[in-house]
Length: 243
Image (cartoon, rainbow, N blue to C red; front, side, top):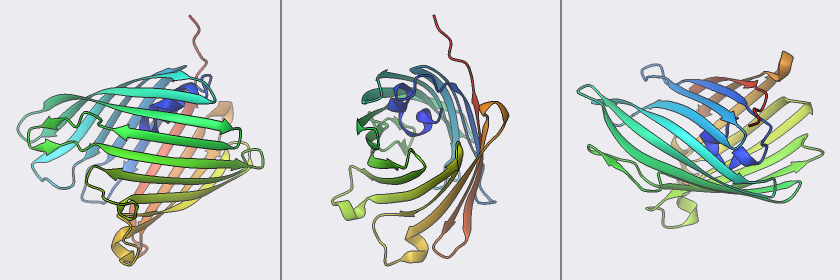
């Protein structure tokens, strides 16, 4: 259900895991909020994302309308996210087309390897450049998925070496089904010596409720332990529709 926010190839990994996903981010107090919504049906999905722009006071936010499609299965899955991007400003709104692509490879039941490209065509709207961004990572699922090790690296066309990538890692523990605790850290641009500005830490708590509904709460802080973001999410399963 979160594939449209992470990697559209995930739609085919669990084809019967259909439902609705809603996420609301509380950013810094002076900034607008971030909102994510997705509705999935087998290997198809529709999603809407809205997030603020931090570096330009004249531009308030970006909203994306996504249509995702994935083919494959549990071993290999390939997906695309075709999106209309709306740039909202104080004068008028503009539109542009963009798309993402991703792949997930699971050579063994305990190992996942994934790659994702965002804004592959690098659209330009007004003076705002949507940069192409790459990411790749892996996940190890141990003890019947009760313990997970996750890692990811992200970079763009300006990245010259691996040390300049944004690195992210996490550990997940699931003592009972769908009750999950995940903690991890992020290193931006590989500058680990400037701890306060380039390191972030995050924690995610997932709690199961009646009928398969799950609620998630997330907190993120910087190297000085100042909270940067709070997030609340809900996942509501829906019965897969067969044609």
